[in-house]
Image (tube, rainbow, N blue to C red; front, side, top):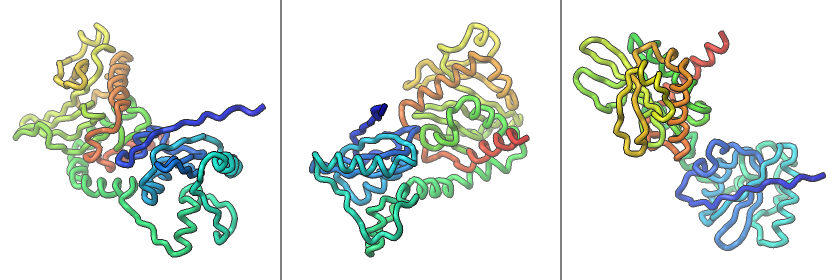
Length: 313
C-alpha cells in the first residue's frame, strides 16, 4: 500500500537567506517545486535544498514559493519524473530536456542543477556570488587575528576546556548550528576596562549566553553563565552565586558565577543544565544570531576537535 508523502511549502522572499526558512533541516534530500510570479513551475531534485534554492535565485528573481517532498536518494529520479509529468498537467513548467548532456543520470545533478550544467556546457558563464562557503571563509579570515590572540594565552587550554564543556552540554548540534543560530566571539571588546578583558562571548539571537572575563590586576579568570531562572531550584539559589540581569528580550535570565575550571561541576546539577539549555534553545528558535558576523570559526574548530580527541581517547 502506498503511503501519501508529506509536502511542505514555504513562501520565500529573495532578501532572506534560504537557511532561515529551512532551519536545521537545510540539507534536505528530495524533490522540490519552485513557484514563480507568472504561475509557472520548475521541478527538480536535490540533496541540499537551501543551496539549490540559492543557486536558482542567481538565475531567476521571480521565485515566490518552494514546495518540497523528502525522499530517499534512490527514489529521486523516479519521483522527479512523476512530479514533472503531474505538474505539466496544470502549469507551464520551466524544465527543459537536454540531449547534449554527457552520460545519463549523475550524482553531480544533486549538487548542481542539470539545467545549469547544460547552460554552462553551451557557453554560459555562471555568476559566482558570495555563497555560504565564501562568506564563512571571509569571516574566518577576519576573525582569526583575535582568535590567535586568545590562543596565545598561557591559560588558553583551561579557557578552551570550560568553553567546550559548555558548548557540548548546552548547545544543540553545535557543528551544524554554530555561526548561524548562535556564535562564539574571541577577545570581544565588550565592557573592556584597563583591568578587565573578555576572552570570549557566546551569543544566541540578541542575548549573551556565556562570557568569560580575565582581570589583569589579580590574574583571576571567571565566567558568567546566563540561564532561565524559572528552571532553577531553591537549592540552586542557595548554593550558587546568582545575580540578576537586564536583558530586555529575555527578562527571565539570571547569571551564575563560574570560576575557571568549574564549568563541568556546574552541569552535574540537573536543574542548572536544564535552565541553561532552555535559554539557549529558546533563543536559537527565535531565529539566526544577530552576532553571527563576529563568530570565530577557528575557536569553534578547537572546541569540536577537543571533543573529538576526548571521544577518541
